[in-house]
Image (spheres, rainbow, N blue to C red):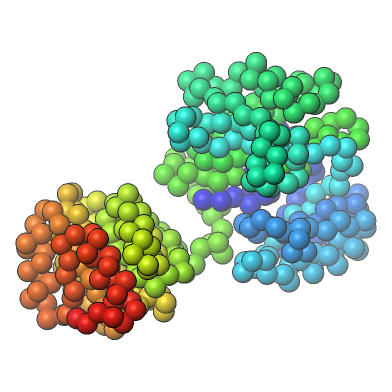
Length: 383
């Protein structure tokens, strides 16, 4: 789950990271009042969960409250990469002397958080990694020991900051790490962390991505979810307890287990197809959840075939088959359907499908199922 800039920075501030004075407005009139309170010279920033806001005209500098109102009206009327701008953040403008990048991500290979810093702030870190990888300094953090002082000094020296900023940098790095841990985040970054002309360090932009699996511990953070980021189908899937991501392919995939779902997508692509979604119905899925999942898949107009790939371990194949039939009765499918049921109660599951009266293409191996799904989506396979 992604957080908006203003939400991320407020969490940073709660852990001692200095941020500019500012507030959020949903109307031009509110923007004007905030600008007056801040002294007039403000940065008006669109709050949407995509990159490239500045290039899209979503970040502008206002010299007066009247100008802030005018710019807020323009920005609130924008749609950036398909997402409408519903709020703007007005921050007190700062005079920038230097821009730094500071962030934390989970390094799955190292099995621990890694803090990164770069003297090339204000630029997407992926671009820095591509063009000048030596500019990024990294340290791995032992989760049992936490971030240590010698590690912040290593980063500080690595990016060439002046000595007078050492204590401030240490406090900000520790505050960022504390926020990262406290919120069960998978990413937290400040880009840029600026050195002002007065010699202060200030986090003028922020980004956080939270681990969905940890949200049950943070109902206050879960309530901050921006529903505009999700499609209607993804929202319905989340509410039903399904892991679903809509893609732009033509083969709908319904699978139990995230790893198996990824393998199904990979092999579908390998045989020349394109998956229309990632969908994991989970272990122990009952017929009601399966029916919901199939309705979501068939609601996508791009889907030209549906591939069911179920390995019955905890999930019973006959339960999945009943769910498929329930969905057929509610949503009359008009695309080819390929089913591979293997594992617990697979014979019973196949019998349920065979006796249903609906025409399905069956397969015994994943490779066979994927090839049949690709052929069916192209109209090259008859039921």
